[in-house]
Amino acid sequence: MARLPLAALLLASATLLGPAPAAAQGPAPAAPAPGAEANPVIARVNGEEIRLDEVIAAAAEAMPPELRAVPPAMLRAMLPPQVFEQLVDRAITDRAMVQAARAAGLDREEELRRRMRQLEENELRDALLRREVLPRLTEEALRARFEREQAGRAPEEEVRARHILVASEQEARAILQEIQRGASFEEVARRRSTDPAARNGGDLGFFRRGDMVPEFAAAAFALQPGQVSPAPVRTQFGWHVIRVEERRVSRGPSFEDSREALRQQAIEEEVAAAVQRVRAAARIERVEPPAEAAPAAPQPEPPPPARAPAPAQRR
Image 1: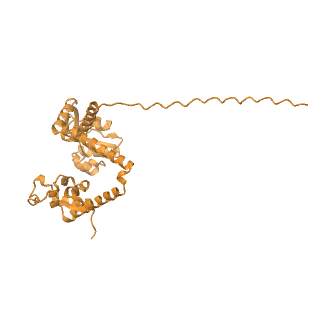
Image 2: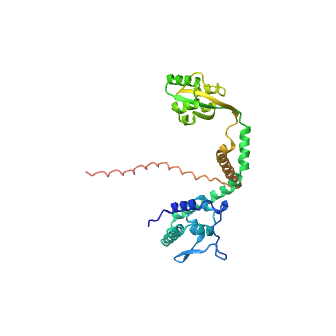
Image 3: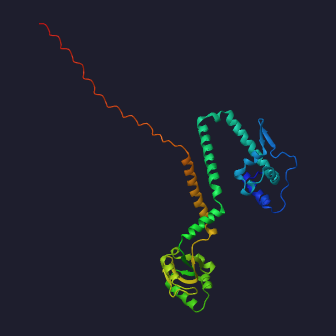
């Protein structure tokens, strides 16, 4: 029988099991028997023990979020035997491979040791930032940030409008006459508009003046609720017949709509502030590298030695 990928089995388990016990929906899985070891030995590889928490940790990345917070002993009771067996098999393989790498002396290679130090330093840096930043990202802090931004934002007018978009002015005028004779704007929009909003009766929802192309915005904001544009409106997209449904003054998106953007802004600011605090508490010395020595000037070649005069020849 073919074995399913580990991640697929874990996901299927989460779907079948439903929410983790913390959600308190229905009876929780049976707890370990009284006196049972909370973190028992599951396997040994060349005498080295593999315990339950290591088995579960080996699969943490492939595990759905709702299962990661469950204690290892309880998770073992929740998982189907096939899934747990694959987790054990994975932990055994990982331990055997690590032992083989150490036996081959790979842990003593300088390049590998440098990369391991870099990984450790990265994990330490990220753990410090999480400890410094996450406690500051409370719901109250995000709401306070939202209120500050709202206080500095000027009210802006919005309208909710429907439209019917067609390719030609002649067709738009025919639609306008049909509506003026009493046809339902929504029904005509569903039947004749080429815009995706046609399925909603042409409803575009609320928008601000700057959200639309200038020609469309000028026509829409000139209308009162219930009014239809007296003539078709031409834009780069075609010809529009517009009806305004509502007008309102708004200060922008709600807190719920803004929460994720607010949280991202807060993370960026808090990380920058944490970095500044750490740097301010550190004694930092910048060391300039020694200047490169200027190349020596070429020395002039010594003149050739003087030649002795040739002896006079006797006659």
